[in-house]
Image 1 (cartoon, rainbow, N blue to C red):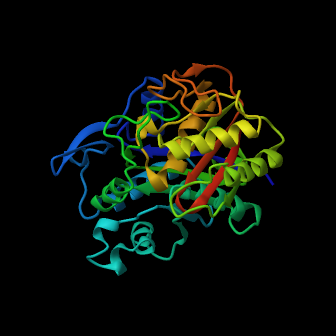
Image 2: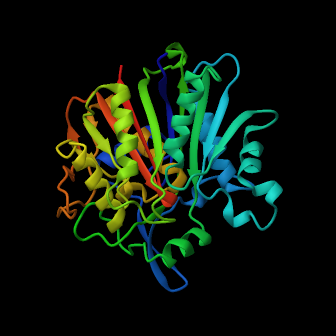
Length: 355
């Protein structure tokens, strides 16, 4: 059974549609800006709330808006299953009421009466893990059409957590670069639709060939230095598809251990000559939304025959040499590999192909 993915939407500091965000990426735009909080400088990719008209929860408003936009791009008859990923949910509102702002309750408030939905919260691999779960549900004939949305917003709690790990760069992050000092936090929502029925899509979809995850259980926050978990996830994805991807959308946080681990994994798998990019300098690290937003940008790349670059990359800075490129490349592309890695040893990979 084939599984198709399309009907994309992104709401981020770079735009309110997938197309707008993609165009800003390939035109070297970044949502990462300087912010001062309690007299301390941060580089963050924040959405300007003043540009939106909403009441109540901004988190719920963004999720609802993104899902609504994606559903306009499909003709669906029958039941829809939803999978929503978020690393932190509405963490800044949780003290008001768990019954209102716990992740499953927030999602339920957006989806309305009696929806069939799943919540995925597994640190920074959550977004790609949600896409993989949708694939599994369709292949197991537990669902025909699945809407996947990943969302996270910057909060005081999240900033404090990453600051305590000394993981933040106060300038725009530099993934895989020898000058890298840490990550930038970002926020946004990315939504796409997966289905076994190609005909529901108003625009030609992408084929999702399969996705897998693996947990190396190395450390509560630090990845395996040898990249064993990521290698296993990527190996399974490549074996299921039997193709070599034209480019890799890496996790690429800009932290020493993550970037080094990814380079080690790609090198040992013989993927070091394939163009590799990180979108974190454009969007920041959007946590549970990273896997969906970055997959969608890569899908847009397939549609437009463009391989996005790694904004600001200049000096190769990983022990194992990989093919990171700064500028977007206009080249015929047929497929890409998406990877994510996260706290707790989680790793996920998925491979996508143009029809």
